[in-house]
Length: 420
Image 1 (cartoon, rainbow, N blue to C red):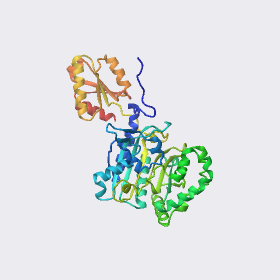
Image 2 (cartoon, rainbow, N blue to C red):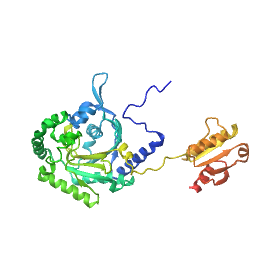
Image 3 (cartoon, rainbow, N blue to C red):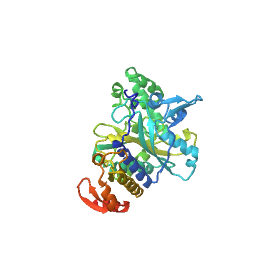
Image 4 (cartoon, rainbow, N blue to C red):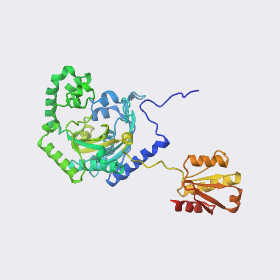
């Protein structure tokens, strides 16, 4: 009988040989964000659909094409989380965290879901690490967010020359309205050459025209007006302060006036982390001062970013430690030896040692083959003689060095440590 089904298209089994990469990134992300004062939040995997329609924007590709939306048994529309920001903001408002001491700094590691064409680094179920700040309306706040991500990339040993930090300012609602008017006037001359989606964007949200991935539409971006030419004086000052802050920390960046981001809640600062060799965007963020009020809270400045963990793993430059392997395997020959081996590994486990023994009923020879296959760093073989003498030989599986020790968990652990 064959396999009855396979993993759904666009999903990824995170197997033991790869999971250590996720754990490494997630561990570093929690460690570094903790030093910056960010506290972890965990939100439901699904939300009421109106949360994303209101926050992300009903003219975006995410809402129109990519969300996994369904009705529950009472007919309420629910959606699997396509991104983390809206859920974190909803939770901050609902719980009253947004009314506590500000700025409020939150971070999360969460699974997200989008119905996109699967390709390298893009899945329909994926993992985001995100950081959000509420109650800080300064360029320094945005600089700190990029510094946090930059520290993470540095710890992952991704060199500066392998990726770009691209930044832009999409202005406030007032100056952006003027830009959208100019953009609409520019694109109307090409209306008959635009794709069907861009026809709709032209009327409802012209900035989304710059995000179209259809090659025929992309050719018109080169000569389109840029948002920086329409920023008002306060927005120009904010952007100048943002760049100055990055300069003061020696964080390299490139101004890309074509970045608009695909979500409607952004204002002023936007940025992306882009791999230089293939153009893969593996993280992005910006400022969204109108989001909290849009979701029903009091007007509160906010800023944040999200990184795609699968995309970071796909970067050839990222360096990960090897998977952990057992510290010691204790092989037992016979009933008495097997019983003692089990008792010893339990003692070692209680002391924080990864210890293994036979639970299958293999011969000693087969046990040692298994110990070698799973990469045990040390091994011990116990037979009747060892049980009687209460001593055994500890073997370093790599160097083949051996040492005779008293047969108890404490002395076994001491014998392992000098080999480190």
